Length: 150
Image (tube, rainbow, N blue to C red; front, side):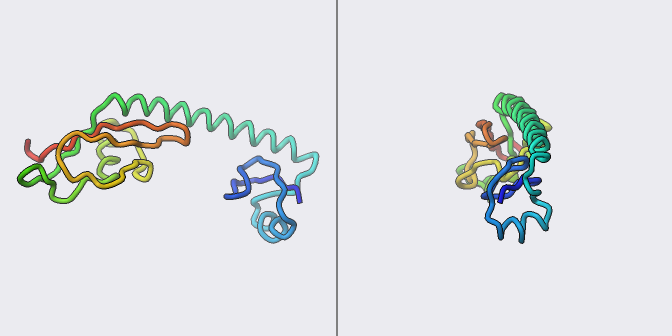
């Protein structure tokens, strides 16, 4: 059954796409819950408008992410922590700590889940951390971990 998706459905398509779905899936889930409408000649114009608005929104989001990436990559983010002898930290620096520091120092909000940190940072010094700001835009953050009171 050909349907126009009114919302993005994982594994099927994005908002504004005209897709072929199995009859049962369309009748029992997509149509009753408002995720889709039957695709007819009248709704194809609506589908085109949805796709255009989605493309414009994605282009605007991408531009914003690229601008943010240039601001973030030019700055060095300082995270102040307590440390013991030999530069070992009491605890660790996590993605949440880095996201909070970016918010405080640059004024830009970065989702902690988008910061790719294989292991928490457990030593003083300068570290390179990758952050995905958009589906196509990633940047490298320079995180400087310094001792409290230094």
